[in-house]
View 1 (cartoon, protein in one colour):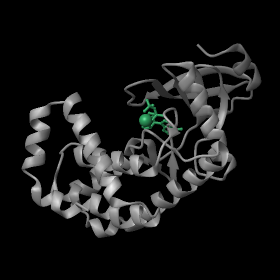
View 2 (tube, rainbow, N blue to C red):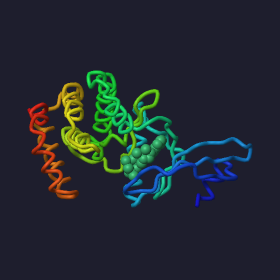
View 3 (cartoon, rainbow, N blue to C red):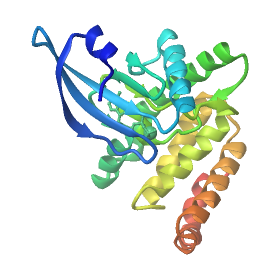
View 4 (cartoon, rainbow, N blue to C red):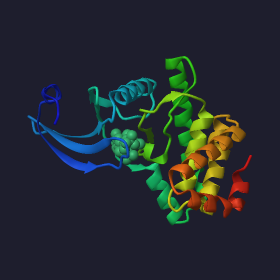
Length: 244
Ligand SMILES: Nc1ncnc2c1ncn2[C@@H]1O[C@H](COP(=O)(O)OP(=O)(O)O)[C@@H](O)[C@H]1O
Ligand SMILES: [Mg+2]
C-alpha cells in the first residue's frame, strides 16, 4: 500500500487506517504510522484521481507554504498521492452548520470571515507572484478550510487562472445550497461575506453576484432543477438582501 521508499525514509514498521474523509473525487484518509522507535505519527493520505491533479496540488501547497500561509505541510508525495500533516479541527462547513443550528447571530461571524479574507488575500498574492498572473483556487467550498488555532486551507488540485470574483461567487452559491438550502440565516451569512470578504479584497459585488448566479444555474442542471428553481423563487426576500 505505501511505497518502500516512504517506509524506509520514516522507518515505518506498521500503520493503521484511522478514518476516511468525505471526498467525491479522491480517496482521503487519516492514518497512524508507527516507526521503529515506536513513535506514532498521524498523517493524512490523499490518493488523487489523476497524476496531473496530484502534481498541481503538490506545487500549490509548496508555493503557499513557502509564502507563510497556513496549509498542511507535505510529508511525502508521489505521482498519485500526497501524504501530509493532519490539521486537527473542524471544517468551516461543520462550523457553519453548528452556528446555524444554534441560531448564532450572523454578526458574530465577522471575526472568522475577516480571518478567511486575510487567508484568501495572502493566497491570491502568493499565487500571482509565483505564476505571474491572477490565479484562483477553483474549488472554494467550506469543506476545504479547517478551523484550528487559525484557518488552514486545503485542496488545491483545481487551482487555475481566473479572477477572485469567480471563487467568491462559487463560495456564496455553495453556502446558499448547503442543506437546509436557502434559509434566511444563509442569506444573512452571504450578506456578511459581501460586507467582509468582498470588501476586504476590494472585489466587485456585481461580478461576484453574477458568478454566484452562474454557479447556481449550473448546480440546478446537475442536481434537481425543480427544487432549486422553487427555492430561488420562494426566497426573493433573501435575494434582495444580497443583490448588488
Ligand atoms: N491535511 C488535512 N488535515 C485534516 N483534514 C484533512 C486534511 N486534508 C483533507 N482533510 C479532510 O478530507 C476532506 C477531503 O480532502 P480534500 O483535500 O478536500 O479532497 P477532495 O479533493 O476530495 O475534496 C476535507 O474536506 C477534510 O475534511
Ligand atoms: Mg475538498
